[in-house]
Image 1 (cartoon, helix red, strand yellow):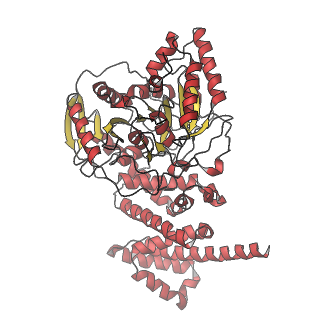
Image 2 (image 1 turned 180 degrees about the horizontal axis):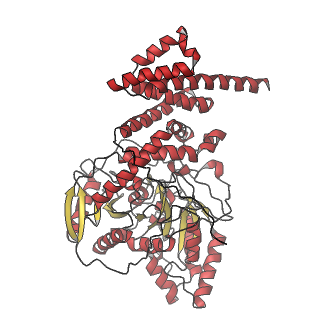
Image 3 (image 1 turned 90 degrees about the horizontal axis):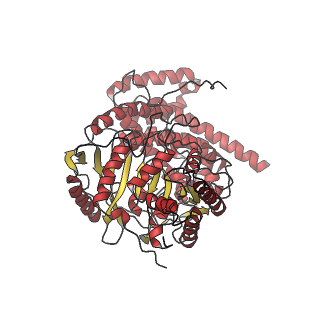
Length: 465
Length: 137
């Protein structure tokens, strides 16, 4: 295999095949992506730390083991980047904010450990919105490393809070990345950057060693070149963890042993994209036409229940507690975005009774949402009503769409976002598939079927040299 | 040292004053804005009176009357805003107060929406407490 752009945009399966056939070594692959991270990382403000020494050490181990006949699976020798809220021994973990720019949490997050055990090679800690957006940022420049720029159009934002994870995968700086989501932080950057992003069911992936924003809302998931890659990554990071009591003991395996032997059953929200940006709407409708060839589509109304109010109240109360010491100490005054320096104070006006009421309502909402999802393999929406906003200044008024972001996050259900094309000005658009708790493999099957019928996930931005 | 002492004293006085306001307003706020609440509001006032001897003094009456006539939403926002200021007021300048207040208003609005959702006694929270026992070594 030649060291050219094709490698930068290859899937995990293709890169793994090249390593196993001897066409390339894990060390050569690591050096190739390290060079791209060094060349383009600062252009898009998507990298916090390049982990060169660790990457080469892990890649050498991968080559040595393969030579000795030990194959750790699909991620063996594959480089990746991690959102910089996942703790890593020796290497700084900044949470995207200036006060912690040199802080080392000398402990590997469970996800980092699991990926190392799966043979993956950590090449970079990636940029993120400071404190994962917990202070209510209203601009792209709410980040230690500056506004994260979209590889498709650098004047635009990459999305957040997993900003660097989206941009680095889109620019071919890493084959895959790990992002996190409390409410939209995987789905939004995946949509804006034209990559495939999977938000797993709450509790599917351990958060031990990850910065907490909201203990009962935070999830960790993969962002990659294809839905199939997302499945391979989730397979490596999912599972019960004694260090995170919220993790589920439900087994997860990808690829799944059984296949669906009937056409898919989809639902689409009534007037879901009526107020969306024209290109988002047009590309969503085109995607629906393709999905009609894969199954039936029914138009539905989601239950009219206080999903967003419950989610916001829970987020307010939990983040007030999470960031209490930062507010007390005044550290927040050092954050980059002015609105983030004061954004946490109001959360302390949330009462314990508000929080508990929201949690009691949540238990009922989860049942209602499961009843709503149950007849379908996936409910189809757009993750964002518009394409990526500007990377400069405050976010303005934009297109809106009916979303399942509030219901999905407060009820901890999974979703996958995949690209549906480009807008007239060259920015990615996307579709989101939502489903019942623990239905990741069903959602992946839908996304893979769509990606088999289309090539949008293979589109590449032109990085001007 | 003198400056620090003065700051501390001022912070204490402000916190005390704000907390007092918050408590008074909560007593009214907690019982809502409908006719049924009007009856309970009187109970609330009585409770306040028994717990706080100063509430009997004529000087406190105008404030109580003012809160009785005010918009319950505004009273609740004011009370919660005062809780925030009691704790973090020194770090929030006048310009920031407007933003913080807007956020507090959103929090109160959401809380009031959630209060409309019917719950039964047995509807427990969506989180489950699990007692811990260390595994056998």
